[in-house]
Image (cartoon, rainbow, N blue to C red; front, side, top):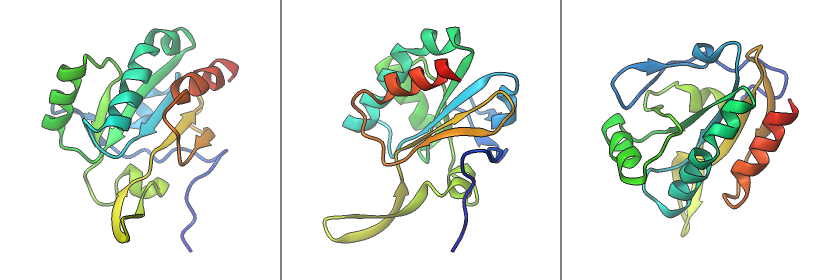
Length: 157
C-alpha cells in the first residue's frame, strides 16, 4: 500500500500551472502558512461555494499570515473563466500532470458514483506551516463552514 505524506511531513514541492500561464509550487510560499484546498471541478455547486467561501475570507487568512491556493485538474483557461465569473480572489492552480501534487498526496483517487468507479479529486484541505510541513489535513471535506474551520486552525498555528 502506498503511504502518502501526513501531518509532520514536508509538503511535496511539485509545480502546478496558474491561470495566467505561469507556475506555482508550495515552496513559493516559504515563510508563510499555506492552505491548499483540493476540489473536484470548477463551476459545480459545492466547488463554487467552497471557492467563494475561501475568497470571502482571504483578507482574514492574510491577516493570519496564511496564503491560499485552490487546486483542481481543470485546465488553466477554465480556472480563468471560473475566477472571472464568480469574482474569486483565492488563487487557483491546475494539477493536471500525472504524478502531480494531488497524486503525491493521494487526493487524486478512485471514487464511486451511481455504481460507477472513476478517478477523481477528493475534496481535501492541507494546512502547511511556515517550515513547509503539513500541520493539519481535512479529508472528505463537507463544504458548509469548512473555510471558517480552516481559518480558525490557521490562526491557532
